[in-house]
Amino acid sequence: MSEETGRVTQASEIGGLEYGPGGFTNIAIMGTSGSSIGLAPFKDEKWAIWGCSPGCYPICAQNRSDVWFEPHRWQPTPPGQFGAPGTKPWFSPEFHAFLKKHRGPVFMSAIDPTIPMSVRIPFEALVEKYGPYFFCSTISYMIAMAIDLLAPRAQAGEKVSIGLFGVDMAATEEYAYQRPACQHFLGLAMSLGINVVLPPESDLMRPTTMYGIGELSPRHIRILARKKEAEQMLAALTQQHNEVAQRIHQLRGTIAEQDYFLNLWSDDVTPNLLQAVSFSQEYTKPVGRLSHAAEEAAKPSTGADVVPLAEKAQA
Image (tube, rainbow, N blue to C red; front, side):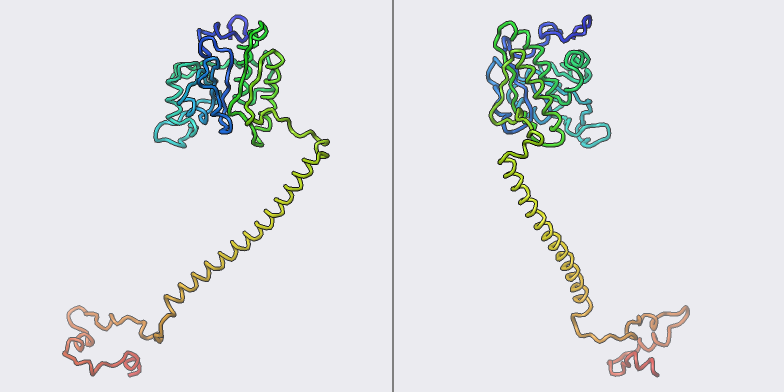
C-alpha cells in the first residue's frame, strides 16, 4: 500500500517483494481440500503459488510457495506446549519453522519479528476499494490482492489467470457465508478480463438452490425424499441403539450381581454368627501373667479335648 495515496500498489512497487517466478502470468490460490489441492501447477513457472493455512503448508513445503497468507492473530505453539494458554494448537512449531524460512512475502495481520518475510495485509486500502462486506475468509483477501496485481495487465491486453486449487468450501455453516464472497470476487475478476481457472473437482462456483422455485425441481424432490428415507432409518436405528444400550446396561448389572454371588454363595458353608467372632481375645496376654485360656492352650493336646465355641458359650 502506498503511504501517500493509501491505494493498493502493484507488485513492483511494494518494497521489491516478489509475488511469483519472474514473468509469471497466473496466480494459483491454494486451499486445503484434498479433492484438487494436488492439481496445482507447482512445476509451471508461469504460475505463482499463493498458499494459506497450516493444512496447506505440507504439500507446498514439498513443492513450492511464492506468497503466503496468515491473517489470523499469530499465537504459535512452542515445542512441547500443545494447548497452552495464549496459543493456537494448529500453529505448530513445524508450521512456524516453515513460515520463518519462507522466501516470499508472508502476509499477516501484523508484522511478526520471528517471521522475517512477514508483511502486513493492506486491510484499509482493500476495504476502501472493495468495501467491507466480502472479506470473510483468507481466500477473499487472496483473490482481491491477486485482482490488484493482474487487472492492470489484463486491461493492457495480457492473458492472465487466477486459479483456485483445494478451494471447495463445500461444507455448511462457516463456508455457507464464505463461499458467496469468493464467488463475488471471482465474478469481479472475470469482469476485469482475468481468466478464472477451477478444476472440475471443485464445487466453489455452484450456486445455492434458488429459494422457493428450487423446490419444484424433480431432482430436488427426489433428493428430499431420499433424505426423509435416511432420516426415518436413522430414527429407527437410534431407537434400536437406545434399546441395545439399555440392554447392555442391564447385562452389566446382571454380571455384577453374579460376581456378588460367586464371592458369597458359590459353596455350602453354613453361616454361624458365633464363629464370626475373633478368637484372638482368648489368647490375650495380660500384663504380668498368662490368661487362663493361654495357659490351657500352652499345654500339650491331642485335639480330642477341643470344645466347639458354641458349646463353650452354653457352658
